[in-house]
Amino acid sequence: MTYPWLFPDGLPSQFRAEPTSADARLACRLLDRMQRDPLLRHERICIEVQNRVAILEGTVGEPDLKARAHALAWSTPGVHDVNNRLCPPSDA
Image (cartoon, rainbow, N blue to C red):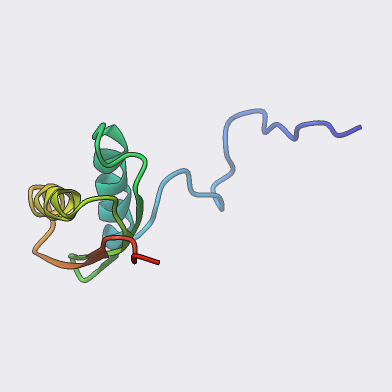
């Protein structure tokens, strides 16, 4: 049997409750926005942010969803550029 480990007064100072870098916070913000979008939430999109540039990789079900993800990334405050590498699934 396992038991949860609880800290009596919240997390100790060596643990961080949120991302520490600005790029990581921006990636989390963008991920949250994509998860709230009913058309994008189930797509296979990987989000990475480097120097305020959002990098989107993965596959989307339709070409329109690539444009939708691109527009959502651009409209996210703090994003200065978008590298959209999304592609539709290959026809086998």
